[in-house]
Amino acid sequence: MKFILDNTFIPLPVEDDDELFPNGVFKFNISKLIAFIKSNPGEFLAEHLEVQSLARFNSKNLNELTIKTANLSEPIILGEISPGQFNVIDGNHRLEKAYRNNVNQIPAYRVYAKQHVAFLTSVRAYKNYIEYWNSKVDDFYHYEQ
Image 1 (cartoon, helix red, strand yellow):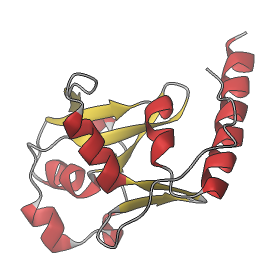
Image 2: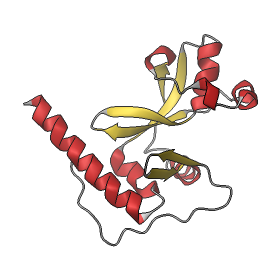
Image 3: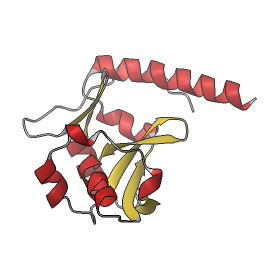
Image 4: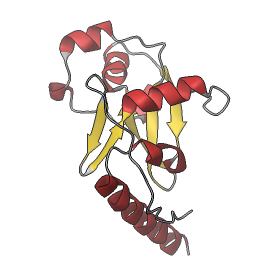
């Protein structure tokens, strides 16, 4: 599914204590995404994923205390980064703790592109994301043929 650029897109305001997920020019407001997930429980169902199937973030960039105190019962969040492909956008400390403790499965929410695009924090990021996503859709369907 391609996106149609919405020239009236207004990014969510960023509060001082909001957690953000930067991915190049794209920056997502994770705090507001988590609040949205929690206020729409029927739209987001946690699934249990094999820990070994998930890509790890470089643990040198993670806070050791946060890893140790991470709550493994709280679902991580996977964002759809291209058609059908998901990356961890929240929960790298939990995932690292699960790896270190040989936990087999971890709860996770899948957030599709059509859902997380609203949590971009700037118009520039939004426009670039639409262009990026649509190119991935073109690549996906070109590859499938």
